[in-house]
Image (cartoon, rainbow, N blue to C red):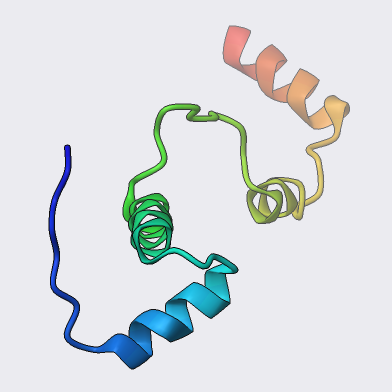
Length: 79
């Protein structure tokens, strides 16, 4: 789709072109749109069900329950 846009702030457009390393106004606008979309689109296409590092740290921060305590609890439950 082709769109004609009037950009009133030529100085900002020049700054964007320099930041993106392009010489063409159309390419600068295209890259700006792509970067904006990637920055604001929710991630969900490759959703991982793995814990973040800090979640793993919190999960294993407390000491493990000794197996003797578990065995005793199971034995008492069966009685």
